Image 1: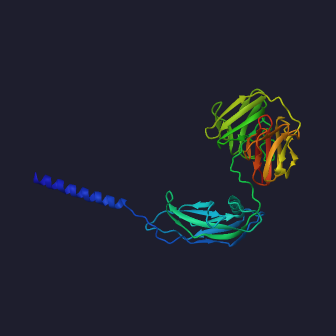
Image 2 (image 1 turned 180 degrees about the vertical axis):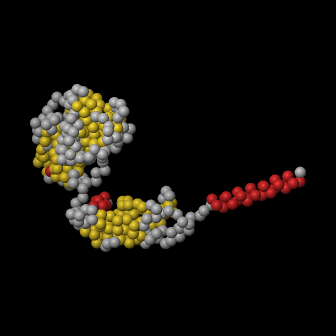
Length: 363
């Protein structure tokens, strides 16, 4: 009985020390160890050359942030047009303790546009680097430094993915060349995964592609009607009867609907763009009527200024369409002016039966 009691006491002591030891191992204190990060820019004055967009322009490097224990450090590189960083833009982020990042002419020009710098003028662009662990804990921030940068005219900020109809049931046929001007885009929506298209479909089949000239990203018929497949061997969505249909697709759920709609009854002799994007409200830019569907109009490679515009029929204000949505939307009769923030070259598409329109910046 005495031996059993001693053995139990001995085991209890071992367990207590074991628990204490485990607790000591789990409690690790991580603290900032270094002074604020020292950052270096590879240039003081930067003139961006639009003729060589992919050439190296700038490298941002900084000293490693240090802590009392070895940890993986993440970094944010931010820019602003003000030294106070009242409106900052995240230019880059790194992981695995990487302490430098380089940018091309095009990337720096896009960054300048994002913070509102003016093309063809030398202006200050301010930089800072912030280090952090995990989910933005134990932050350390560098000094603020700057360069003088002269950007060129940048393309509009267009953070959208377009899908194009292709197939013998559609205007574009099966020609997926980038030069095929009859490949019509679907209308984007507020939900980035959902698209629609309303128009004429002829007997045949069709799919959707992301990039003109490539079959790599496509959406075709899946395992059954109503389902989509992104596989290169996906089937065609069949049209058995010519007519007007509304197509809706969800690229996230990989589903679609394809339903007949009433054919439009009103046709127009001309559709045009009018507004300050043409330089004034007295000049019409004429769109070209589709030979496939008389209610679809387009204009490829048209130069438009920043400003506002509407679509109108027969060069008259009797029938005009507008709404307050840039790049795409559904315009309504006598609706608001359509905004356009940047001067650039655009492909323009308009459907007079639905009011659906799309403007895509082109390079």
